[in-house]
Image 1 (cartoon, rainbow, N blue to C red):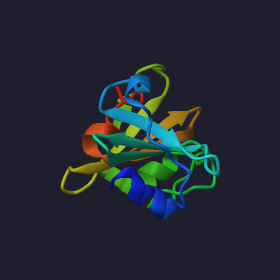
Image 2: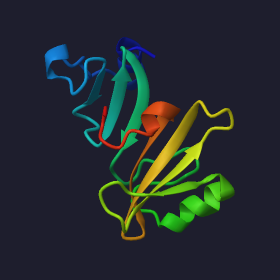
Image 3: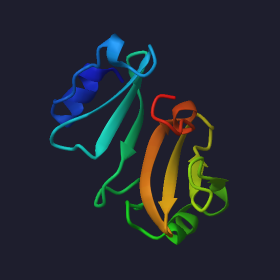
Length: 132
């Protein structure tokens, strides 16, 4: 979905990041003033991932920032792929692919709780550093 359609769906507030300010030529991340803890990643002008960093916004399986890690395991069971966090070996990425492997959701942990989560296209869900 291109930026103009995403803006229409969420009530506006996002602007395309100029190419010279992007971390990579085809990728940028934006949020709105009304929801600064939700960000939208666009690659080649198309929405590829949505990140959530605040409590109160639930995933499709009812999991929110601040929930215990065990809730992810209960919700997804053996579909969860656990990996060590790239920046903190005490923490994990809990990633769940869609059945067809085209999409996924990843939960990042901190002290036994969900710190953030993001979902979207499988390739972009694998990114650990924004557009990189």
